[in-house]
Length: 289
Image (cartoon, rainbow, N blue to C red; front, side, top):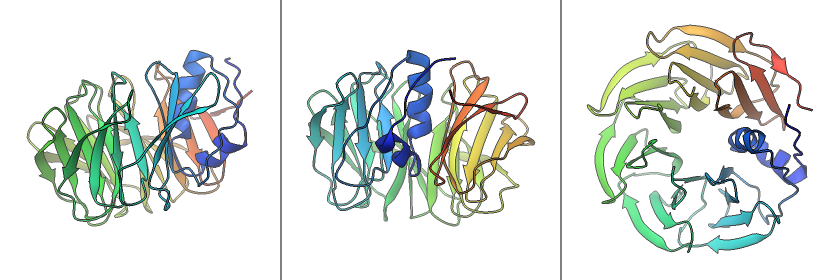
């Protein structure tokens, strides 16, 4: 199994989110990461598609997005423009763009190479906790404390539609690999599946007992993983909405999830400051070497 090192800064960020995604990609590319210094608590990490740059966001007063070169561990750029903390930042599938969501109620798109702001997406009425690109990079989804999910045309920077149904803040959004379905998680303890083209709710996935923090689709789009305050990771059949498995082991809130490219393994991070790997078929934890 691939050997890799997660030092103090990266483990600390696992408590906030994003480390599972980073872990998955690092395992696939045989990269070893050392400590990255940041003046504030890191809320979210995103790795560029070519695995050369890490983007970090903080929800604190820092209001910046910082980029590090993976090979050297050196900070290469600080991106400013938001007027509030930045809970989330993600790379576009082609790596040319960054999307960030902020406490200032805006989503901003940035040129990843230069750090220049490309456009501001306004419409949410409260802080934004989550953003995600569709696989083709043409559509962006954002979720907010205003209880809505909004879909945006990336090229034009215009809102396509608003998805309503959640009864509390939206904490996580994820597109299916084919881009036809969107999953959203909420503080209302629900996970919902949406038809992207129609903007209609397909179904709600029942069974979560507390706030749901994160969702992730398997590479084939057939399985959805969710995790949250009840410490349990749930696996759902996307086609039927039925619960097909649970993964237990974390001691506190599950903060992020990511499937490995082969779909056989799942990575999770938690506020308990651990990153765990799971065998999806058996539901057993895989030791990290």
